[in-house]
Image 1 (cartoon, helix red, strand yellow):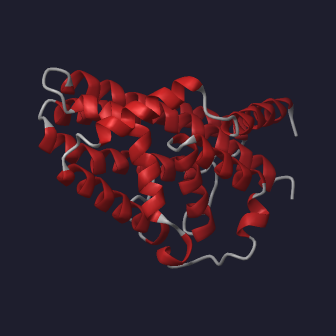
Image 2 (cartoon, helix red, strand yellow; image 1 turned 90 degrees about the vertical axis):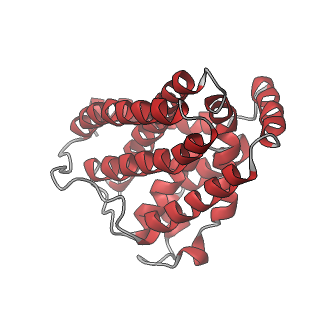
Image 3 (spheres, rainbow, N blue to C red; image 1 turned 180 degrees about the horizontal axis):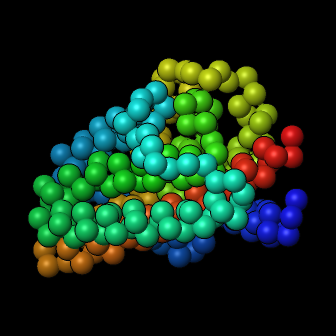
Amino acid sequence: MNNYEKQALEEAQVWLRQLKKPQSMTRTATAKVQGRLNHLMPGAFHRSMGKAVQQMTAGVLTGSDYLPNKNLSPAQTLEEADEKLEELIPFYQRGAAVEGAGTGAGGILLGAADFPLLLGFKMRFLFSAAMIYGLDIHDFRNRLYLLHLFQAAFSSPEKRKETAEHLETWDEYVKEKPRKLKIAEEWDWTSFQQEYRDHIDLVKMLQLMPGLGAVVGAAANHQLLAQLGEAAKQGYRWKWLMDREK
């Protein structure tokens, strides 16, 4: 392991420890606000979110909807992978921000439409990043890893802690899992969509408010991609380093 990899390992370990930290008072207060706002959201919005997450999860685990551009190639070193990722994040942030500004200006109906569109941006980003770090994205177990990184970025403290524990002992966690599996046999998408929805409810609610939607939509989508970018960087670094220690 060279010096760059040693530093990357330390940073990934710090990230994993942070995932296991308990909920802060600020987060508790925010969760209460989100709970109240949740009741104000139209039923159609929640149904749209639930359907979008179910379809997205099925697509991630068993489909080809999010496969990256064929021009992407795996990096030869971890440092090269990190450099490629740093170029990839702003590309997806710009696209998500433009899309968020457009749908945010349109009110509730377009705000609801923004949800599955942003999910698509996030999943394509994770698949592209996985290819950069050399993961076989046709292997179900790597797709499962990808969903864990999504949860690391957008879940409650309790779920993030559980996710970190899975990532730390990944080989044991997936040892008995086949390369292909039906979604219903492995992934609780209902809980998954609830965690994600609760995490982003506040910013998405603001996006639906007249006069704020366009500004909040662009900023929110940009920030949500930044969160996912950090999870991808540290999570894929961790897997890269653990795979090479075998």
